[in-house]
Image (cartoon, rainbow, N blue to C red; front, side, top):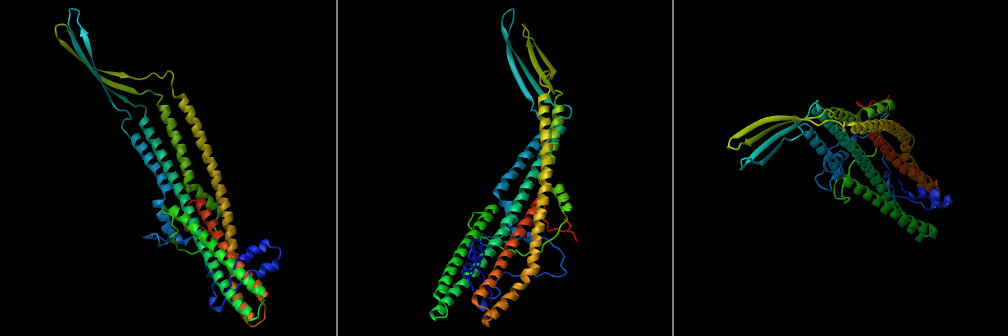
Length: 467
C-alpha cells in the first residue's frame, strides 16, 4: 500500500494543534495502489560522478504543437524562433554593414562641378566661357586600416553580446523546462493523493453506515477529499502556467499544448571551483564582449590621432577662355587642397575617447568580479543541493518501499491503529514531496552553475571533476 497527501505539511506548519492536523490528513489506498510514490534512483556502488544533464543532447524537434518535446529540441527551437534573440541578432547585420563600409577603398565619393560665365569684351559683344571641375578627397596616414580594425572589433563585440544573449536564453529554457517536469511530477503526486482520498471517503462512508466509525471520521474524510481535489486544480494551474512560459520562450503561440519529455532524476557531480572560475573567465561571452569593446575604443583612438593629419583633396579642372576675335583658349589643370588644423585638432574627440576607454576598462573589471562572484555562489549552491540530494538517495528513499510494506502488514494484522498509521504515512509522504523539492533545487543550482560558467557541464572532459 502506498499513500500520498500534502496538506498535512502545510497544516503542520500553521496549526498549533498537531493532533488535529494529523487527523485532517488521513489517506489510504488499496494494495493495488502500492508503488505509486516517487521512484528511487538506481545508483551503482561503482558509479563515478557524471554529467548534470544528459537530456541536453537529445535533439528531436517536434513536428506539431502537441508532440513531446525534449530539452535538446526546446533549445534548438528557441535558438531558431525566439523573437528576442532574433531581434538581438539583427545587430550583427548592422555591424557587418559598418564593416563593409569601412572596407571601402575610399570612404569619400568624387565630386563633379561645372559652370559658365558671360564674358563681356571691351570692343563690344559677349560670349559664354564654360568651366568644369572633378575632385576627390583621399585619406592618408593609414586611416583606412584603423577604420577597418575598429569596425572588426565592433563586430566582435556584437557577436559576443549575441552569444551572451544565447547563453542566458539557454539557461532560461533549461530552467523553465525542468520546472515543467517538476510541476508535472508534483501534479501527478497530487492526482494520486486525490485518488487515494476519494477511495478513503468511499470506504469511510461504508464503515460509518455499518457503525464501525463515528460521524466525525466520515466528515473528516469528506473534507480531506475536497481539499485534495483543490490541490490538484492548483497544481494543474501551476503546470499550465509553466508550459505557457516555455512556449513563449520557444517563440510559439502560448496554448499549453506541448508535453516536455525528460527525467528529474540526477547523479550529482563534483567540480573543482578553481577550474570553473578559470573556464568562465576564458569563455564567458559577456567578458569577451568587454575585451572587444576595449580594443574597439583603442582602434578608434588611433584612427582619431591619424585623422589629425588633414586629408588631401585632389582635383582637375577644365576652362575655356574666349577672345574678342572669337579665338578660344582651352585650359586643363589640376589642384590640391587640404584643410588647416588650426581650431579643430581632434583634441576634444581624443579626450572623449580617453574617457570611453577608461569606462570600458572599468566595465571589464566589474564583469570580472561579477563572474568570480557568480561562479563561487553557483558552485556553493550546487554543492549544497548535491549533498542534500545524495542524503535523500542514501538514507531516505531506499527505506520508503520497505516501510510502506511494513505499515500495510501491521495495519492489516491490527498491530497499529489508524492514528499511528496516519502519522507514519504522513512522514513518508512528506519525505517524498521533500525529495521532489530537493530534485528541483538541485536542477536549479545545476542550471545556474552552467549559466555562470558559460557552458554546459555535461562535458566532463572540458570541466574536469574532482575525484
